[in-house]
Length: 577
Image (cartoon, rainbow, N blue to C red; front, side, top):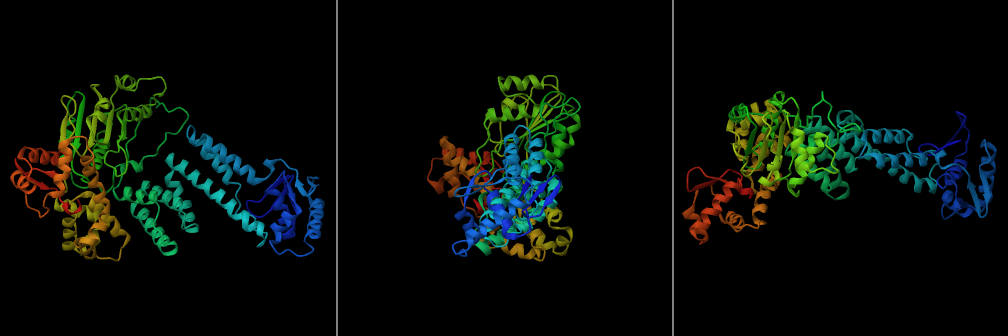
């Protein structure tokens, strides 16, 4: 027999539905099914059916229901065992038990074999037929067990989406996740999964729209802000975090890349890329050499170094027949520790399909690159020790490294600086994201908005993306928001968090000059005028040599730039520091 409670209460035998017609009779059966194999006292059954005020004939009524169940059940599985009754069935004959078993199997294989895990989750979820115990009326046992069973289902559903997102199946998940977030509008995990699926489908504005909707409901109905994970996801989407676009696992039991399928680990290029013609030309020139190439791209926070590097890596990918590797070193992400040198090598070896056990990572990495033509992209580095072991020295290979601080590479390495956009490029970026018609309708407001963002791509993307979620607001409204001190800090909070990563790295450094640089930054005026060593020494009372070293350290940290020897200025957005 097959007993089902994940929906209406049903009994099936030999392919036919067993008629258990009376709702209270089904309620007795369900009470025994949720504790199948156990003895359930009559008093407990009474409580499950009527609560604290049962009729005086309750126990007699229970006996009658049991007798009727025995008559309709095809097999003698309902036993009388003092002080109550026991349903003697195999646990797997109850759909809820089968469901739980399949989910446990899926969890056990989710890491080594996510494809099998996805299939097991699907098999479990196929047992779900709708609201559990739906046909029992408002008996206490349904009010107790239906929410538990539904939570079991939703938890498994969310876990299955995690596995499928890791496999890169985001596009096919969007319709189902959209429907589910409408049914369960306050479940943050479902909202997070939908946002990821939309973002990977290049629908960033819709992803942010869902965030704003759940935030409004949480604030209005519960008086709370979204949780940390959801807030961080919103920040990553606003930053157009490229690593968010990359699934986390490789499909298949054998991770080694086949000969005709070299690794291609790059995130997809961003569709709203603008400008950077000079920088791209410079990279093309550097990569035209015949020997191993190591190119280091550095610049201030939010300038678009990663976007440029990924764009160029896709452009020149055909030159590297054996594939492209990509690792995000997480050096500039708020609240995230940067990757260690060993972690970087391990990630590269994983992409190359090299088993971890019993290998020296550096030796295994060099051995696997020998004789190959590969491009290695190391994104968001912070120091030489992270990247130098991963720079290939094979003649046909190349490395592209992004960082804020300039990193001294191996002999022959070249460096490219990426600054903020020009005015025209900044306005073009606004149009690409917020809409050309909106920018054409308010060209002066668009230009002023670009200026208030200091032509910084990250700030522009954040403001333009938010503008898409408020389609009826004119650009002039956003100009007003960014021109007012309080609302400016609120609208550009994510940009400020990104900038402050560099400041904290200096302040927490074990190097005296770097700590002095953080201290000096807090003292410097932010009135737009150039800063000289003499003026900074007078302002602080520090010795001139210490001031000079601290200012140069701020230049290296990309918090200032030096237009001429001995003079310094902010890149923009100084008011956020």
